[in-house]
Amino acid sequence: MQSSEAVEPEQSTGSAPPPPVTAAPVTAPSAAAAPRLNGKPANGQRPHIDPDRPLKRTIYPPVVGQAFRMTAEVRVKMWDRALRRVRQTQESTLLDFVGHAAQTEYGKRYGFSTIRRYEDYRSRVPVGDYDSFSPAIERMRAGERNVLVPELIKYFGNSSGSSTKGKAKFLPIAERQIKYQRGSAADSLYRYLVWRGESDFTTGYTLGLFPPTTMKKDGPTWITTNPSLQSIKMPAFAKPAQLPDPEIREIEDYDLKLERIVERYFDHDIRAVAGTTCWFSLLFDKLLDLAREKKGYQVDSVREIWPNLRVLVGGGVSADPYLPVIRERMGRDDVVLVDTYNATEGGIFATSDHSGEPGMLMVPDRGVFFEFVPIEEVDEAWPTRVPLWEVEKDRLYAIHVTTPSGLYSYRLGDLVRFPSTDPLRIEFAGRLSGCLSTTQELTTHVEIQRAAEAALAKTGTRSLDYGCAADVGVEGTARSRYVLFVEFSGEPPADASAFIRTFDAALCEQNRVYREHRDGDLAILEPELVALPAGSVRRFMTDIGNRSVQTKFPRILDDERKAILRSYVR
Image (cartoon, rainbow, N blue to C red):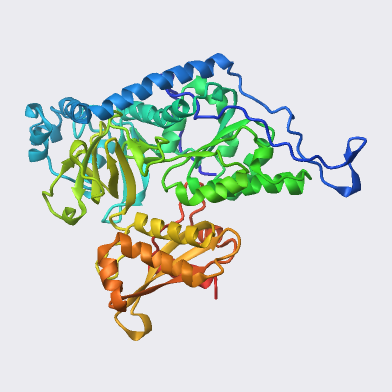
């Protein structure tokens, strides 16, 4: 368990979204009951779970769900209006921030008091990364005011990333940002509720797969994480529908945490699960194991245990690669996985809109001003900066954000593109520091993912997870080769060569430089498929020291991690 030096006693009582979305009740599948004698299974057969067994529900009456649904409808209309008036919405957000900070040290340096439109801001204020803001942030951590914003910043999010100088990141999170983040967190659920037409989700529970709460006193400020802060600031009225209980949430070891979760909440009416997408199937495996091995039931799917679970709220990675396995475990095809794109530097930027179109719908009116720099200019001191209302479809950008916490045109380090500009849909394309490149092809996270998904579909196989690395200097030459590591759910493809040909062709289709350097094996050879033994993904996460339920399996692997995975198949 992570320990804290101190825990802030203050709890928010302000408005915040009710518990994450839950789905309308559905009847569990009626599997054919095993023969029974005097209420006990005959011939040693295991009993099925009673589809009508009582499940523990929340204290909320139906009227609460109806009111939340009405709130959702109002908010979605406001959101759609903001998307139709993107410049007005975003420019208003920016001017609010610069006006608020006009008399700060940073605001005076760049003339915030005379900025009247975005073009004024862009011509004066430079782009920056963590290292450029770090000196000011350190002063704010010591309690200094009027540096980047006028007020004292009480909270600093300890990011899992590191700066280019190897220092830990402590990102400012102002009270105004917390308020905006609560709103954007609700938006993904509001959109889902309106799309599905549900009004009774608050009668069940939302189960969160999150790391332990960390709130460490550091002089006049607190060091925390975004999930921890959202938990601390959750209003009292929302807590009765949130699981797990504190003593389980504070378990650091994810394996033990998931075991305790399924044991404690086996008979609860679970309506939604929220967390990092890649851990959902692990939770479901532990739930099914508990039902079969410890409770002695004959059970084939999660649906038989938690019949009303139909929505999962994920983030951090694309949901698409995980859906086939998740649906198989859940025993239903109508499960919805709500995807989100979020960061400590501002909360949720975009979310699923259930249109069936690629990408996530932007949230332009929740306290973040967005700019985008074409990938070819990211290393320039004054690159071209494109506001949200001027982005081009399918162009690759580095995303920059301006927030109410004092980050101005701050580079996140993420690469994004817009598969649609009307409405604005964004998709995460990888990290600036995480492209796979042996001949300047700069293959992104999304290109790897699309190619792998094409190969899985072509060969009729499913994966638990996968990642891609590169071998350089293959066979004593200057040529390179991509290596795709996959742990399959079930048997590997019968025709591995067809899998690799499809993966290769999909990369060629997406990436011009890769295609040119693959032609005739000029500089890049045909990729290699490495089918990992069962349990490799879980073992790998432990071996690299990532045991949190927030951890994601990396899509792009460096040489050290490539060597770890290769060792599993020797």
